[in-house]
Image (cartoon, rainbow, N blue to C red):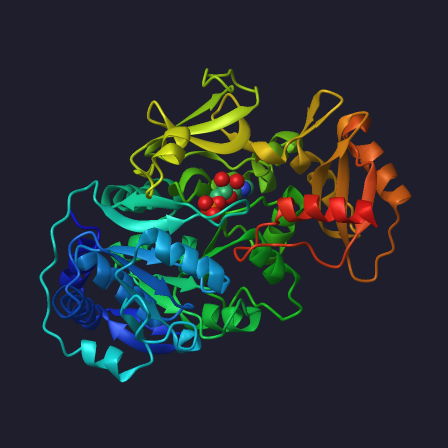
Length: 515
Ligand code: AMP
């Protein structure tokens, strides 16, 4: 079984349907896409003599070619290594060496970083070159058979701490994720579109598969970076549009001063995930765009597939007859219920199952869980114990199976022997109309073990002080959880996927202290 079979199936059904767009320009229909994919596969296996299972790196910003190289590599029986194009050169080098790649596809902007003939002779193919164009004249290679557990995608974790690790994602994992999209996340109707506004090396790229499976359009934004104007325009142009966005992107769409006309927009679904979405923020998002939101919780180690907070879950709080607004808020503060292919268990540090309501590590089992970490059996053994993936995230399940994330275990604060979950404090602060964003971390404290510190971005035109924030927290959360100190900042450090780097904030605290 080769996950690239999805393309052949969709093409057989509807060869002339539009497949790939660069913004509003048609790049290829399904038949053309399949031809290009089969030629790339031929080139990799015959011209470059790659062997089944070899790894091919993609260092490309989002572009139409991303889709054909990704599928061509898989079609050829090879594995893809999509690398976030915004990483530092040292990080590229680390991943390329760690994955021991056999060739690299790059965009023109990296031509100086990766000269065509590297010292180690790894072929580098620039998608803007004549060489790339000539590949399309190669004959078609037949789809190469793979075992379900063969490596398909080496997903390098975003590495908010330490070096990134390569989660080995198999063809089976990708198929289970694809089927889970239809059973637990959303339907993809005939003639639908996915808008790739987020990096295709991560969630947006993974969602290529369910959309190929249903013969949808893949629309790649032309602007470098997330551009609200372009997104609003493309939402008017393409039919039934879904997009995957990190919470920071949703925040930008909500706060955009550009006019958005729901009547002329074909927005179907915004699927968000990858980081915490606060209740106040999702309510604001629904107020602007309507009930178009679905949240997923996943990680590279079980791509896009742990839980889902459905459209219906989002709509619950708007329901006329719903009197229990606290329950509705609890649902919105959760990440939803288990997606169909996975089982979830909350466990203590010994791996023993905890009861509903108790907080522990989230463990996951199912066909989406990775094979292990590339070339790192020690990390694999730490991560997968008795078939359960240890996510490193803390959370609790309620009676109906809704999972509420607390924090990553390393971000939890223990003050005076009591656990404090930064997310709860952040949720409370964000209810304040003058707080635009915030992040709460623990700081070593001789008396308490750790104390709670908040970094706060004040909304434009707002005036806030530590005293005002403190009074606000007293009104909203237990006194012992409230921050001891506030740092008012202009920005929060984030990685390239928009996740706040709490390690960097903790380091910043140590520096501030030395001043
Ligand atoms: P990555 O492997 O880079 O996709 O990062 C996965 C991590 O992001 C998870 O282990 C969570 O800590 C966090 N994450 C993913 N989805 C969500 C979500 N919906 N809400 C909060 N955190 C999330």
